[in-house]
Length: 164
Image (cartoon, one colour):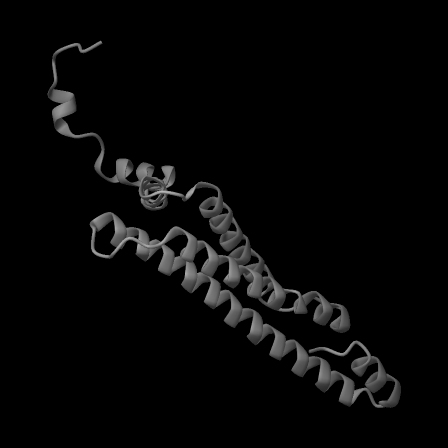
């Protein structure tokens, strides 16, 4: 996709530097747009997985096939890695990092962790139930926020027996 000889050749021919600057600017913008689109795709997959977990736990959808889901996620991950490999080459040509690379790295890492977790653990329906419950469980920060807002139930304070 990117020829490592194109920009050096243009630089050597362009004594005014205007053509090189336009080419670098256009390449940077194109790659930044590509990074944004790939990041959005990966985040959409993560949202879809969370929605599937919610649907599964409610019993709204048929049970997904573990092998099919893991293969699909593996294919997406491999395609994303190949797409990601273009960015270091473009950054090297431009001598700076492409805008949006941190977000893309973060989204790709999330997909890699999800794939590894599913690959290692999901073999049965019970495994999926455990994974879905973990996926939907509130974080410690979310629990703390609820506790700060609502506190303990009054019944806990009204209890006068000593259970321990």
